[in-house]
Length: 388
Image (tube, rainbow, N blue to C red; front, top):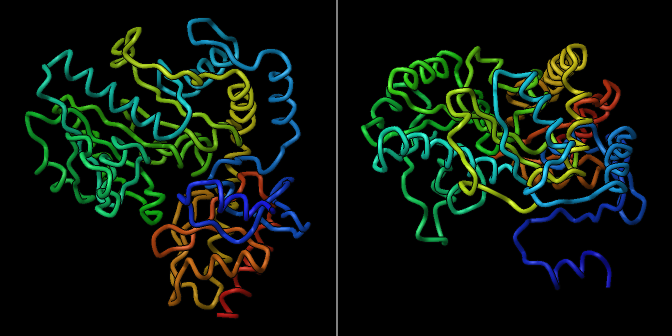
């Protein structure tokens, strides 16, 4: 029985898999069980920030795995402590809470926001406003926070306390009431179609939160850690959220999530108010420390921006590409016609691993991808679109 047969027989069918079984990878390239080579511009949905098996990352992870692989959070550990210090030194945030995924990070942010409001205003001030076309995770609560009706099915009853605004300030204001405690946004909506929020709109939300003492949460699960050409995406909007969440690229390929807060919220959570068995795992944090040390370099981030601009320019030269949008190396490609998923499947056959976001093709390549590799990706995509 081969890998695909095993998967179909023994794994729940929760993913619409492409017809390829990957076995190994190096840099921007992956190899299947037959040895076929693929250029990967999906990075495991933005996870492999430095591509496959970066030597420095591998060394950091394996060294830690051979030292101590796990401990209870009842004990102190140098790897997560060091990572938290780096993040709080590089940003305006003061405290970090670790988890294992973006959904867990968003769950933590929701809890912090609600507890802050509970402590200060009482239990009835608990509603959170998110935006239409947002995506915040697959748990029952983060699905509830997601502003897409398609996700609000099957798993009833969903967690209460969420309202969904259109991406304009009047719509947001119309939903604010005495029960509102927070506003939750993705500054670039990844799964929703690589939608970049308007800067004036984001700054108006920040102003509204200041006026009403609402907690502003920025979901940076996909946009964080250099993806948009800044260490964190909120820097592109000249605001400071009260809470940000991060996951995906931070671990470089291992599961991690975290929530960071400003001084205002630093003491909201106390022992037993939150926890996770595998959170702050030292092996994962060793990899994350290496990622942060690599990415938080002005020249590195400048190159992410330059490569993003270069990629957009090349993509717009393809006949059949209607528009390209995104920040840094988070790119959405709108086609003149044809189904994006069908094109993505055909790209795989031609040796390019690419993903979709609603009706768009989506690229989230490794942040250290070369210009030659970007050219190769564009060439394969062009060939695939021409084949129809």
